[in-house]
Length: 123
Image 1: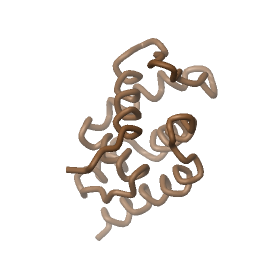
Image 2: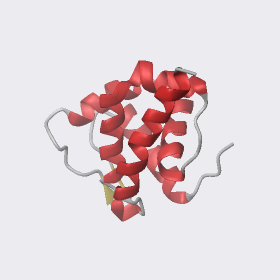
Image 3: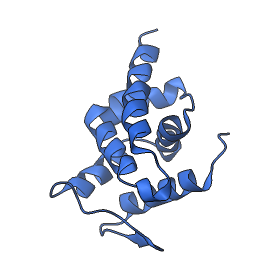
Image 4: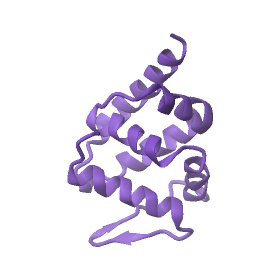
């Protein structure tokens, strides 16, 4: 099982809250940033309904902690969630630099994770 640090746990919990809730949430001193465009968070909720909680957590682990993903989760990422939803997730993760997330790392590692999954599915 992947080792979780406080920032990763916080991000997964916050993502889960957004997925489950229809309103923008605030957690302690951390507030969800404004939507980059109208309907963005609604679209994110739809995206995350396409992927299991286990695999959503695996994607976050892969991006933030450079973990490897199983072929099962790669299938869910590529074929169920898709590239656009993955890019929405990257924007969301990168927009939380106050929680210790390195936005540059997210935008470099995120496409690597997706492309690695595409390659894994063609092996």
